[in-house]
Image 1 (tube, rainbow, N blue to C red):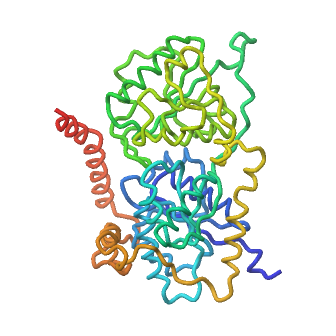
Image 2 (tube, helix red, strand yellow):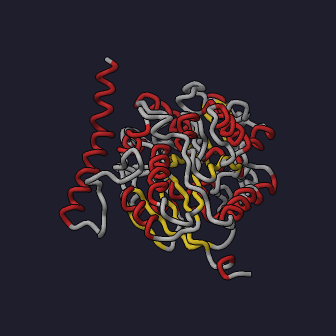
Image 3 (cartoon, rainbow, N blue to C red):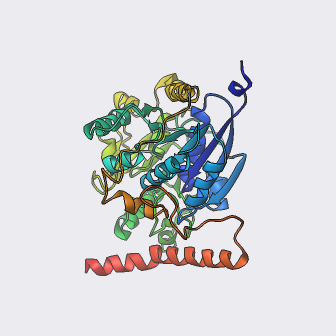
Length: 443
């Protein structure tokens, strides 16, 4: 066997937030046909993860650095990789596909390019998918998503062969073994209810205050239980989505009972002690279902596309706080769950086989791979594509624009201070000014 077929694959992951870094790095590990050397690149922006967030994600790399889009493209032009995972928002993926096409135009061989979604796809389906078109593999996290993705591509006349069914890469952990008896001998933990919060769902102060009030009320109603509010980030940090009204700040105005706590940390570790997972529409619900933990998707605020809980229609998990307080426990529908790629016996272990085989085939293709061919071009989307590329300082042909920011070295003290000040101003605008303007607009 040639040495090239046994040495570790060189893999790069470009991510723009903590959750996308987690998805990208774990996906790379699962779809690579053999051992990898992983280089991580964090795209500089509003959601660039902090050291604390990276530590909480718990995913390591052989190297990890923060880059601008132009610096990343230069690295991809100068260095040789076998596999590249783009773990970005749709516009970022599209910009990188065009930039990479330009950067690799004189290269005899290029990496296999993979992209996909961090979790449940419940909004902007066509928009997000077409922005990801052009990658060699567009990963679908379930059979249902794979069917939907192919239908969108085929419906606009785009090549749908890139759509590859996998599963969420971070599922796992021990299966739920049943609730602990609160009257059991000393040392057994109490029945634990966890509410998995989301940064942007719901987005109004009234709705977020309502959910917090109901959670606190549940804790008072059941003093023998431990009630946890699982938070994604600390105030001032950003994740994949913007959080204008952190629950931490809303909770400061509450007289919280002793059995109620705010917690951070890895979701898998929290699920290790969870007896009931409650959420509006978080991907944590799929993690919970995969482990057979009783799971509730709330209907209190309605079943609406804006909330994302419409994705769970047919799941058997929809219920309200009133029903939960009365003792109701939903039973997930096996067929629905199976279509989501979770809780399906041992099939999760083989969920990435097709992607792995496809990548191995592309890596071994004689003569290398053809140029990247995104659906959007200056011909098919002349009024849309240039703006997407310009946001990443790229011209219509994917070439870096004059004056595009680069970072040849670590920023000096003055630049660091300016960057922190800019991010602080952005956070202040998101968390303080924007809600005030929105409320004024509602008067």
